[in-house]
Image (cartoon, rainbow, N blue to C red; front, side, top):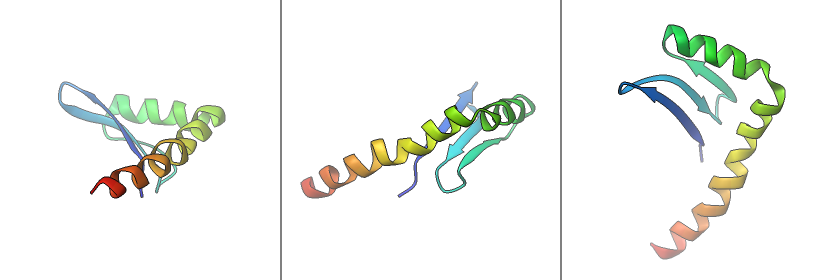
Amino acid sequence: IEYIDSYYYNKLEFTRFSSSVGKFVGFTEQGVRNAANWNNDASYLSAMKAQKEAYCLNHVPVYYSNA
């Protein structure tokens, strides 16, 4: 299971957080700056890492039990 949080502007993905990578990755000039700032904020980064457990691991059994 992987948690992905992507940020788009004008249909272009500029920043993405992936739980498998464990940090933000920027794809544009602005996205790289955002990723660097967010990766330096330890509390925000740990909150994003916790989203996999808070969201994915709680919802997956519900979806699979209904299938």
